[in-house]
Image (tube, rainbow, N blue to C red; front, side, top):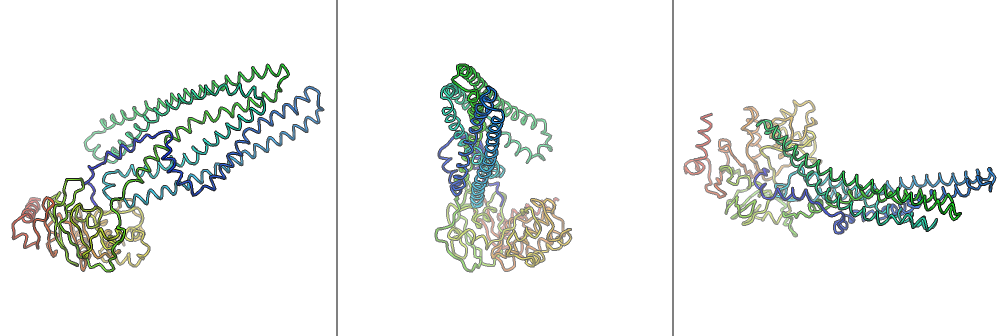
Amino acid sequence: MAHGHGGGGGGGGFFQEDEILGKAYDARLMRRLLRYVRPYAGTVAVSLVLLLLLSVTQVVPPIIAKEIIDQAITPVVEGLLPAGDGLARLGLLGALYLAVLVASSVLRYGQALLTAIVGQRAMYDLRLELFRHLQFLPLAFFDRNPVGRLMTRITNDIDALIDLVSRGVVSIFGDVFVLLAVIVAMLALDWRLALVTLLSMPILIGLTAYFRGMMRDSFRAIRIRLARVNAYLNETLSGMAVVQLFTREPETFRRFDGLNDDLYRANQGAVRAMSTFHPSVNFTRSLTSAGLFLAGGWWILQGEMTIGTLLAFWQLVEQFFRPVLDLAEKYNILQAAMASSERVFRLLDAPRTIADPAHPVELRHVRGEVRFENVSFAYNEGDWVLRDVDFTISAGESVAIVGATGAGKTSIISLISRFYDVQRGRILLDGVDIRDLRQRDLRRHIGVVLQDPFIFAGTIASNIRLNDETIGDDRVRAAAQFVNADKFIDRLPGGYETVVTERGSMLSVGQKQLLAFARAIAFNPEILLVLDEATSSVDTETEHLIQDALAKLMRGRTSIIIAHRLSTIQNVDRIVVLHKGRVVETGTHRELLAERGVYHRLYELQYRAHQTV
């Protein structure tokens, strides 16, 4: 359908949605996200057990290193143990050290694999739910929301959530486990050095709070400016032909340069935050290490502590500060995921305003009678496109709907297909209000041929059957032959298996139109809706093929043709004339010309324009 009509209604709303910033942590959103993880609770539980074991293997090596120094090396150096015994102890403890490192690697691999699987599966489910929901949203939603941003929800935003599930949340648990394990190990080894280490905690808490504030502001600034750059790029690249035609390249570049500079400056804030946080944490770690060596050295000289204990603490300090340094990455992942989840869930919460009835009427056989009863319709509230439209099309009758641009012709087809619901009146199919039918049941009886038919990437055959495997190759060929499409298909290098690109760029306008006719015949609908003729921009031979195909399609079907070129509809059973959203005349071509009303005026204008050309 042509969707330009209602586009002004709310396009800006979705752009604002692109700038949703979110909190670093939102419990409401996290609960919704966990719904998708819950089916894999068993895998998550195993992953957490592995994470707990992994945190233990992180603190065991420093303890083994202490024993190597205190039990194998120092006694030999001091002459308290024979060299052979020292080597035996060293070999045993070295083997244990190596075994713990191997176990740590295996646990890390298993844990990373499981969390990645959970993240991918959970977001696979969410992506499916999102796409399923999008398929059933009304066309009014797509009128308001650009396709590029909807694609971003299913791709980039879901990727941000995968990062959260597989790297962010689990890694935060891992960091907490490691931190607790390190503190327990420190207290077990020597409570005095543990206290020296823990003196750095207030400094770390202060640095973390300061960093969070800086990163939150920087993150918001980056998200807003990145959304602006993406929107501008999408618009400019889509309209590059116009930019070049009007030689607006310099001005377009200047505007992009300004947006790019804003993004660059916003990123500088994030760089400043990171360049402040990391050196500050590393400096605090160095101060802590210096404090440990001073205090530990004093107690060693006093004979109150072993060298191995000091070495173990020196290694444990590395483990103690690593989770704090990881905070920067985790905070960014968490904040990006919260913003992405809010955008994704807002899309999932978009209402299905065109819904199937709770108790649908079953139409076992469709004759094809279409009746409009006092129908009034507006895309935007109060801006009526159709006003009190009232007419009946009998089963098997061919009717053309004509009128000036903006008269409401295209809306008639959109309403019969129930892409939109009427605000007043009702539309009946064989005497049944179409709102009482399932959308699927209604639309399978309707064939629509658009002025600019949509061609999907795939083969010629797949574009005719639209991936409906019940339509076999013989039926595809028969449909193509029926509407004269076989003549050009047989000339293609691969025939029906010729691969066409998205939107059918390799096909002419006339060839795409014939494919659309073949598609309509393959699905064999009782009601045929044709939106405009596409013969104005094709050669004479193709125009003849299209007109012949159209005549064949209309035979024995209720046919509604939205016409701009009045010369092509003179043989229909009846013509309905719309003017400013109202039915003003109805009759045959001859009858309407004799009335010398709106239809006569339209015909005269087109005839004179044709004569002038």
